[in-house]
Length: 170
Image (cartoon, rainbow, N blue to C red):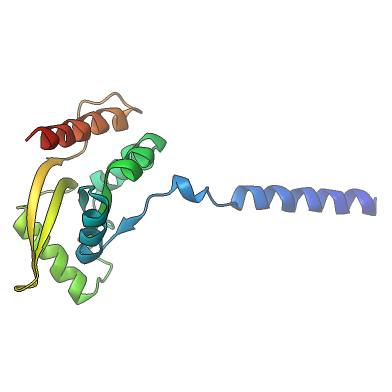
């Protein structure tokens, strides 16, 4: 009987361990919050910046975009190959640092963001003497309305690829 109980407990802990195992690191997205950091990564890689304007703790459509598009394997693979991810958050209950709040507000103002979620694909140039960034927007995206339910990432990625393709031809 003791052997049975011991075996049962071992199996329970084994399955708990499996369920708590982390996803492989290659299936996770790397979101940055610093414009300076993504500027440098974009400059080095030649990839545009994918600027995601969100209200992380209050915006239902932002969460829906994350669940329906950003969490899908197709988007993860596309993002790793094509863009540098920048999250520009405008929370209501969570406190951001004054520097991050100022950076995000400046980006919001520069790109005339009036609703969430909004995504801009863009490049940056840094004016070293004035220590500020000049933005070169490529195009913007929002939640993919009209998409087939459960396949929102397909329409989102089609729209994103169209923007990137147009930028290459201009």
